[in-house]
Length: 409
Image (tube, rainbow, N blue to C red; front, side):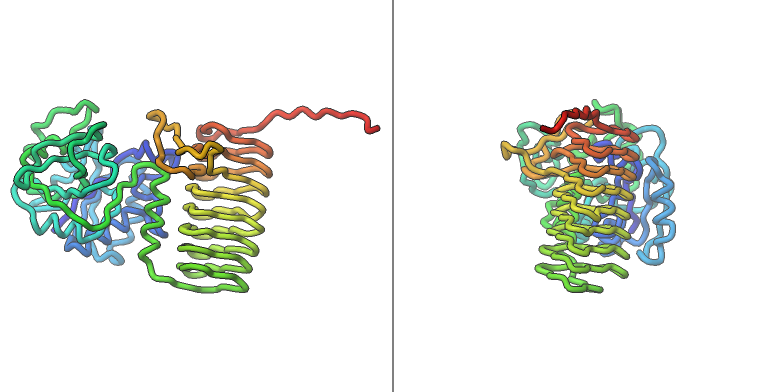
């Protein structure tokens, strides 16, 4: 069994994190989310994957080009052309497909049982996996009659059902001819959903998660580490009130850990750090000096060594927090935090949300960031700045200060 993994998208909704990497390379518990998906595919009986790439394709090819032996899968890369949409992504893999195959979005997290069930119950040209969700207005929704799709709605305001399309499909090679007959959708894309009417739908019950916006990474990482087994390492004079997963070379020194916490290779926690889980800390990070990290995801090489607070945030690679940096995560009125994205305001559904910070950002001493703000990669946030709006990539942000001197009496 082969799989076509759609990994070519720009990941615009995940900016600023995807300005410097493909969406499928965003980390979940120490691995790119695409790696977790390939592991699930392997468990479901897939032994070869055609990974369809485009946006920053070299990062995917470089990383996974060395992973075939470890994953136990043959990996082939196919580039999607200028046309966009899920149907175009699947069509890009046509030369590699001769028999029944799985097509799957590269930016989802799913149990292998879901994939296996769709394969097992496949009939006809297309079979799609569906699942009941709590917020159907955020997904493509299907209505089923006698086991077949009778209606499809894309993120409807008033959904008729709670069954979401999971972007997990089993298909026959004859689908490629059907794709060629498609016309562009209202979004000017070639969409595989236009072939859904009459297709078989298989309802699954295992865990599935669509990582659509940056703050969804917090939930995805939390879910993943909740399932992992504890793994302790070099712990010195510290209190551990929960589960820790420590990778090779990780250290905890004179610190307090509570909840589920993952610590990547060669990262140092302490002295005098407070980590509140669920939190995931990447490789070669250093958190210490009365710094608190709460329910956040830190990518590799993040430093927060002195008197900082980072709550409910996603922090990109190689970010440095100057002494006293504060990331606010709660509104005075206690309302849900909305985030201004490139597509307008988005309700995060979270009452606590800090900042989404891109790679290579430096914070000066005593700087602060208000809830729900996006900071692009390569920025300098100078001393004393309070970030109260989004910051575009490669910005140098400072505050004007007037010093007034008077004679003391």
